[in-house]
Image (cartoon, rainbow, N blue to C red):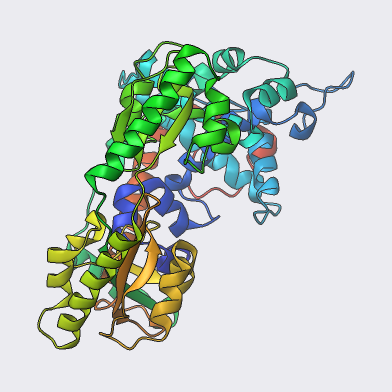
Length: 491
């Protein structure tokens, strides 16, 4: 198992692990068994049971064939053949490597999940109906998005969303209980620097992972100021549009298609479906979740400009709504002023009058990077290092710009489009570039720290399984007792 962790060590970071521990651990452990991996399969199980066509499950329904059967029991919680087959089909559809031992590995994942659930029941852990409902809304929303519309989803499966929620409710409750139990085992765990060093020291020399070249990139952004006149003009325009809608001169979808400057919804008459609370800016949420169906909001301002929205339907923490955006216009002269401001900063940087980090903190209009010395954060890891392909996926213009830079160099002011859709200028800076190398404590401490923590968590879970399985009823049918498991399930 240690070698499996080492092989994927380069894909992990401490911040990634802290912010999304389950995803990070899945990256470390790969397809081999680890109890920590189990949660990535729990929802797969639920979804597969209800979202895969019955014919794909490999369970016979013809006359004389067994419809389903219990293949294992943990505590009072059965594991069905259909659960195992659903997970296996999910592996196949995801193009993961499968072999003759794949089902045994999947069964061990299920045994662990059921042991978590059994212990959660013993410890009287509980989740509220509101928690279950919120999780159901989130999961079903995801699948509706895959189909495009709720109508396609319900037509394909022949049942309403509410019927799906009823079918899934008990399974989702079990998932949340298992997650709570998992958190009790490893949630507060961390590693000391001594433990990281010991972990690295125990890696065989010929197994130390190879780390690709990585870069740290900074930026100083200057956005043109929006004048009061431009704001006044934009607000007047959207207020006039709202009045025309309210008077019945034209319906909201038509006005959104004609006038909205929101590229995500204008072509659809302003329509947004299955929007979760917190997915959009707070001002948008505030209106969306207090309107009544078909009610239209007042004009409100956000960082993107001025909005009106019309609620179509609200389902708990999810809404369908129409949205119309008018953005204040940026004058070409104001955009030029932003560039000239950066020209001055560029001169100061070129003459070593100011450090890049100081200039970013003092002058940059990008709130996300200015407080970290201008360094851009990798959204995939939460750290400031990027592999070049990651940087290219996020922003190709930055990737092209730094390709020609030496360490410590920066570009002249270059045009950009900010995340709020506004034109701006920026200076891009190459702080560090590592060469491809074998992992070491100096350059790759965060990655090694994440892997050391994952190993510590894995050891804790396997010790927990050993303790709890002794005092928990576990039964496995004869045809699966020949499986080679990593843990002793039958005592």
